[in-house]
Image (cartoon, rainbow, N blue to C red):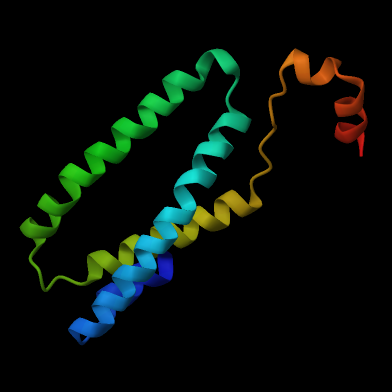
Length: 120
């Protein structure tokens, strides 16, 4: 996604911009299920609905406000794409370096076969 956003910002032709947009759409389609699974693994059961709700609220605000900010900045202001690409790259690096504990339910821990798998 980071490379696609930088590509959109630096695109000199419509075809290059369209290819970068396709790459961004594919990256988003891959990232969405992974982010949901990560949230399910990380969030304790009673807080999952709250975190999912906040995630969807933030995404909807971003989809609503982002284009308006782009229009306000001007269509030729390509540095916004590059900045967004850098933010995505820093976020990916932070997720890669972050060791997030996984919350396990008691049912998973009680099953003897799962306990063996968790120890391995």
